[in-house]
Length: 355
Ligand SMILES: *Cc1c(COP(=O)(O)O)cnc(C)c1O
Image (tube, rainbow, N blue to C red; front, side, top):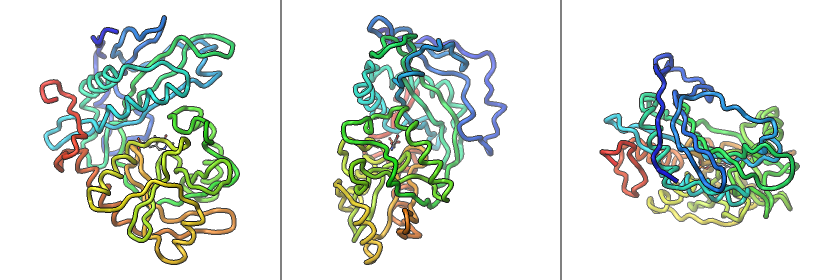
């Protein structure tokens, strides 16, 4: 495909209507979006256009058969106000892994990164300046071919939207260990960032919230014994000085924050083990005092400290503090906002002349 991204700008930006001290979460979108169409076996017409409605045929296959995948990432500003992205090539790669599982075409990784860069550069005024806030980016792909029948679609759209967010502060959370419903089984779509995974999680999450919990702690599908992950986050436990996180066994989302946190923990001298962990083990570690802290990791909040895990008939007290989690969160935020040396080469500037 041609990598020449055409740009149609709005006449007047709506950014002046946004109160940066009070950003409504998830409902504010920037002036523009990036779109690219897949037809006749190729991606064509990459373009940045004013944000707006997209006419959709009622038979669009994504609406019926769920061929829809997405990504989540953020743009930050450094001290000089230069927009920066955190490991965007990782999101491009993961989108294509999700596409593989869902029978969807790859989107060229370089065009993904270039599209994100150009959109962020154009919308740089929308990146909230306050610490802890960012411009959330939502790249996604869905089948928009009108067809009734069971086969892979042949027409897709790839879109990137941007939505200012934050500041989001990590508050301690309570998890509900779910033993009735499951998120992902081996051989299923748990590794894909697929819309359908969320569809299946909504009802259990609502039920957990009604019981006073913040998120669901997902357990393995076969035995409800092994810990997988949390709502939209991967999970880490510190037991006896060592960090343990569930291994990527096919049913756990490959979090980019997870991967980065493993790197940072090791860099700070901690031992990190990726392996199967049972809920029972966490229960025992809590009882005998070796469970030191636990946290969830994801792009949306960074790191969320876990205070408590509830389940039918009992509650595991985790910890009221998460000193290492807090330190890692501060380090990650400092790297993302250019306050700390980017020694792993994770940050990408969006301005051509600086990249
Ligand atoms: C996106 C996501 C995560 C976190 O991934 P990051 O790349 O760290 O944002 C974790 N679990 C699920 C189910 C997700 O969809």
